[in-house]
Amino acid sequence: MSYRAEYIWIDGTSPTAKLRSKTRIVSAGAPPTWGFDGSSTNQAEGHASDRVLEPVFTCPDPIRGGDDVLVLCEVLNTDGTAHVSNTRAALGAVAQQFAQHRSLFGIEQEYTFFDGARPLGFPESGFPAPQGGYYCGVGADEIFGREIVEKHLDRCLAAGLEISGINAEVMPGQWEFQVGPLSPLEVSDQLWIARWLLYRTAEEFGVSVTLDPKPVKGDWNGAGAHTNFSTEAMRTSYAAITAACEALGEGSKPLDHVKNYGAGIDERLTGLHETAPWDEYTYGVSDRGASVRIPWQVEKDGKGYIEDRRPNANVDPYVVTRLIVDTCCTSLKKEGLV
Ligand code: ADP
Ligand code: MN
Ligand code: MN
Ligand code: MN
Image (tube, rainbow, N blue to C red; front, side, top):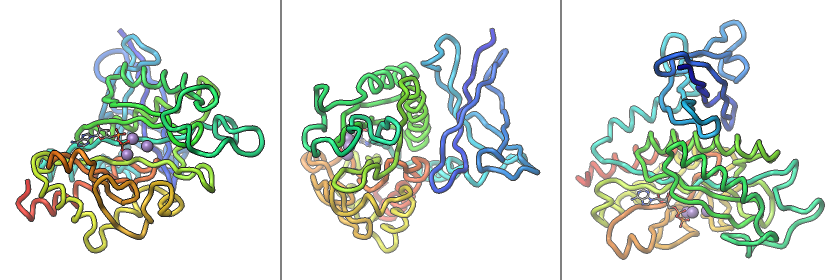
């Protein structure tokens, strides 16, 4: 029996890559390796345009249903090497190197719906009532797009994704979903699929989605992707929690991380709106004004996970999870905290 496979990949658009997809009818067996025109996705020149789609993660297609599937792919060159835009390949190597640490991630994806040029729920001219009542709100005067959010959640669950929750955010039309806790590759693959399902679902309502880290200038919260992280040692000892927070603050690490945490990060990490300034590294218990927060429950239990609050909504999960695993596990290993 033939089925439809939606091949999804990440393109080469700079500074923030976009998702692309196309459909293949597969007559039997697993989705095969495929190809595409890289000259139309900023991944090749026209005279040598072929790029390869290598399936890496397949799940049920909750939109088409039946036997149809979504197929997330890595982009390769025709000689089989990873294309320069392929950040998953580098994560794979680092995840394997530090596999014994059993890293887990939960990523909080914030995003904003747009109706034409305005955030969903913003009046035709001027601004809505200031922030205060929208976060986790209820009622038609505060909540915009819930029917899209619920449909997206249904589809993520039907696809088998490990969504752990959703909430309305502090600006009208702004929402969040969380994926995880999962291993670095799993959380990243699932986040990309969940993003694709979000764009695709909102499309049915004539609404667009942006991961712009600062969709409205001025006194409105930006959109982030808080990245919660633990290793086996952190899930059993507070010394490892502190060591991970310290590792993220060592030497050039704060800047190495922040400059790879999504385009436009200096506009969002201003020190206002529950952020720390992008050029200062701090960590603290319960502190939503710190770069890295240790949740109060973690201090109380003496173990658990930390929250890196710096990543932008438009961060590449393959990059943020690679950097955190590399920085923290290198240091934990040195201190014998495996
Ligand atoms: P916040 O209070 O910052 O809004 P959320 O509830 O939105 O927190 O998100 C917390 C995230 O932390 C969830 O995605 C959850 O899966 C994740 N998480 C919980 N425990 C761990 C852990 N041990 N390691 C990594 N992530 C975890
Ligand atoms: Mn959250
Ligand atoms: Mn949030
Ligand atoms: Mn958070």
